[in-house]
Length: 146
Length: 146
DNA sequence: TTCCAATGTAATCATTGAAATGACAGCCGG
DNA sequence: CCGGCTGTCATTTCAATGATTACATTGGAA
Picture 1 (cartoon, rainbow over the protein chains, first blue to last red):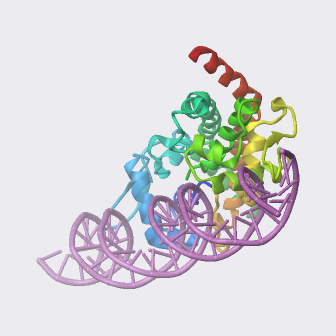
Picture 2 (cartoon, rainbow over the protein chains, first blue to last red):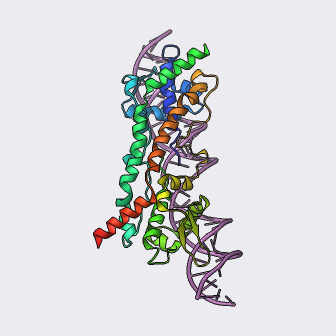
Picture 3 (cartoon, each protein chain N blue to C red):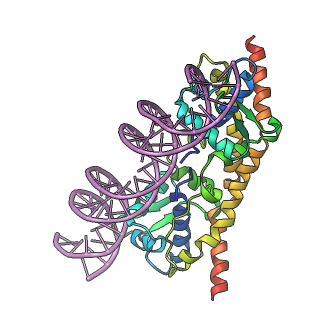
């Protein structure tokens, strides 16, 4: 399986908000246009990001703003805000190994720490990138286009 | 989303084959018992592992054997054999960013290398573990139990 | 104060993939 | 040739994603 596109959508949202915040009113309809999806999808993701304390969304008039410096919002923060897996386990385990089999009753003990290592390697790499990197990258691209 | 349990099932299979190869005839029914699932599930995974050249499965009489040294079969090898995602991308991308939006048409260029880094970090960690580690761990557990 | 744009959210629906299961043809050693 | 085991297909159940419609709510602006 793959990590759902909501993650890249969320990163897209952050990039749009930062890029257009002085130029347009960045609404869920505006974002849906840029991302190529439905405004309701956007609002759901905004709600998740809000729940994780990463952004504020103004009702009535609309308007989205990060609650911290962009350099303090990592890909990992976004990932955890978006991915609903309780416990945050990357690997799904088969749920009924046979306790009467020596392997069956030990397989968890045998694998858990290794799977955790692998997951940690991914998450540590995610922590290295922040939304500030996206701002910088985007500004570079805009400068080239101009 | 999570990585499907077929991955941990495959690791369980390798461990059982190695642990019981001299003691029992390790059939898909035997494995299904230990793992707590259906023999057909096991056979599908065996077919995948066979297709990746990691094991040989004898028809008629039954019997499973790795094609290489266990130390030469990494978790990554198993992962790639099992996970059917074409291209092997861990992250799913929203498919219709708007090319008329500066962010929409650049978001791929902006994210692709970073997502690739993160995936590579996970895969590199996967390459560090092999089935030989499972054999060693399992023998340690069996020695403790005895 | 009323209007209205924008958000929050519930309810569907189509699609996809995982996992379980039953059925059966094909293979092969004894 | 028989019996056990694999390969494979078809079907079903279940959960998650993503799209969409509908509507109540909010709160700034006219």
